[in-house]
Amino acid sequence: MIKVRNMRYKYRNSSQYAVDGVDFNINEGEIFGFLGPSGAGKSTTQKVLIKLLSGFEGEIEHRGKPLASYDDSFYQDVGVSFEMPISFSKLTAIENLDFFKRLYKKTVDIEPLLKRVGLWDDRDKKAGEFSKGMKIRLNFVRALINDPKFLFLDEPTNGVDPANSRIMKDMIREFRQKGGTVFITSHIMGDIDELCDRVAFISQGKLREEGSPRDLKIKYGKRTVNVEYRENGDVHSQLFSMDEIKTEPFFNLLRNKEIETIHSGETTLEEIFIKVTGVKLRA
Image (tube, rainbow, N blue to C red; front, side, top):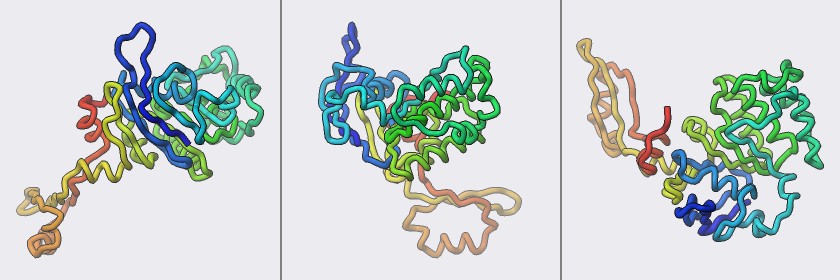
């Protein structure tokens, strides 16, 4: 779907590149996570990929053709949900969506989408009266109204309550299952771990790591198993290597002790984020 080679971008009057020679592919029908601390180059990369920023260096292809060769018809197949919700505060939710629907040749029925994200009963309320979470859900629906083939989602569930966040993640997965492609940025590593087929980490404008969440967790994790057990009223733990779990001491522990928990040494995407980028996630 997208092929990026040695892409660089420098803002006017800046002496440094915001994005400095990144290479990656986004395959059709996958969810690709693009992760990094604030100021790392995530938003710049996304704006270049959706043609909001021009003048980049390097090569970018969309469906095998140079990105710069596409005219405005490019947007007919693209849906975008920005981190800061975009809506007209004096228009109702329905009026906002009706306005944006006029920009596309093909649109979908918005009633099922609004019902799915819990906004149908508030469809006639002005967007300016919406909470942050409601605005984000409205923004998400807007990204889907043209039945896109490619979704760009920037912090799509940030500020959304857990129940509606689950619904939105289900909708993203369903979009992918129907053949859609998703480029997603988020600081919520649980969402990334749940959703993404592959992730890339960017820091200071450079790509630092790339792979599937599973492969990265194996690469950066420890091949160990920690067993916690209770004995004489106290909790004890014993660490085994992956090779040692095939031995008699491990089985004896399981047979003879009151086991409370067993954990592998698998790391988390949050720990990988910190290790790879050198920056802790914001609270």
